[in-house]
Image (cartoon, rainbow, N blue to C red; front, top):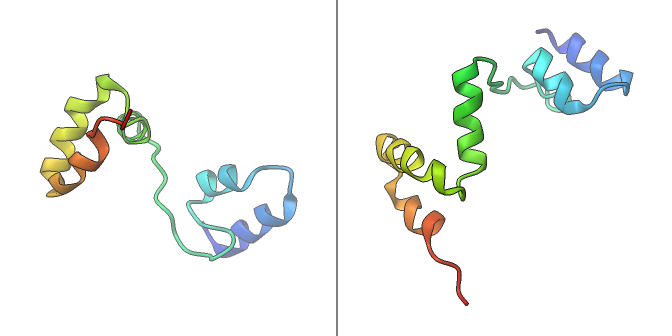
Length: 83
């Protein structure tokens, strides 16, 4: 979308910034393009990252982090909380 549309949405104030970013794919404050998950699989994967602490997401997240070369994050994500 064009920067004009993003600015229009920013000025409307009838919809949230989040919704404007979803429809335009742009940040109305910086005019920069942002990634927006629109495909069902992308949304599911994004949700798995958001809820990394849920046990059912651990295996998927472990595989994904290994595939990305970010296995270094796993100890920080999966450590047991101090009692």
